[in-house]
Length: 127
Image 1 (tube, helix red, strand yellow):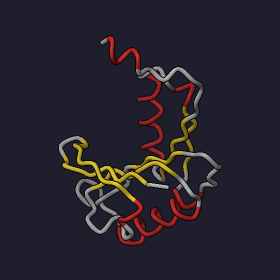
Image 2: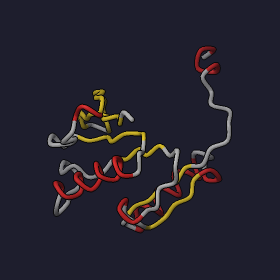
Image 3: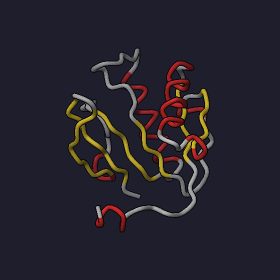
Image 4: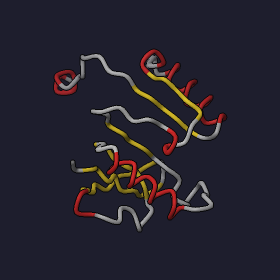
């Protein structure tokens, strides 16, 4: 407990969340309310490709990877995602089991983790 207390982030920040499904936005808002962080999160009904990314932003995303949620075009989705990171000079990462991601692995590091019951990777973008 004492070690955890020394690692508390006690600075201002703003979190932005988006999804293309309005139901997921409603669920996320309720989860944020229950976690007492609703005042720090701005939600929008939009896709990653529609967002204007400001400088010095950290993007963390958990896109569909075909296990529980289907996507018509996973290859296109992940290509768009990698382009968004590269073109906007973003740091952050992607939680996924989608094997072809990322294409240019030399600019990413990988850490294994669990997301629910799924064995996933967290691919962290190296600037």
